Image (tube, rainbow, N blue to C red; front, side):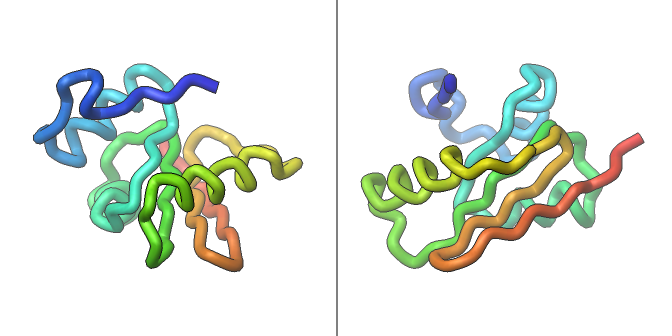
Length: 99
């Protein structure tokens, strides 16, 4: 699995909308802990490829990595257009229908 870091690409400081548009064009899921991204795709109907929202209190990189490792080991189909909300003890997947 490829991961692109915003800082490594020089995208630090871009708006959430700009980052979602980049990921959409590149057909990549966006991984964030910023709930504003979910608001943009659900309520503002911003184009997005997929969104993984990490909603945990401990945002220590090792903890987040551990959570992501568990997520990616699950035997579930995650389709483009999905919003995945990962919490400490549960996972929610919402499919957003885009025309």
